[in-house]
Amino acid sequence: MRKQVYVMAFYRCEVCEDVYAIDGGVTEEPACPYCGQTYCKHLKDQEISLPAKIKRIK
Image (cartoon, rainbow, N blue to C red):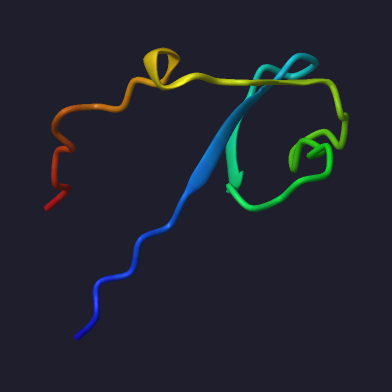
């Protein structure tokens, strides 16, 4: 089985403030998938925080 690596770019919508990811190879201005606005800010690696552990729901 081959390992696949995906490069994602993370954005925060300046209108609804949701955070979303798109394929890193996309070159056009992304629109927010939630509200459709194109006012977004690219998040740097330092601005992205993901939980260290995810609890399993039994």
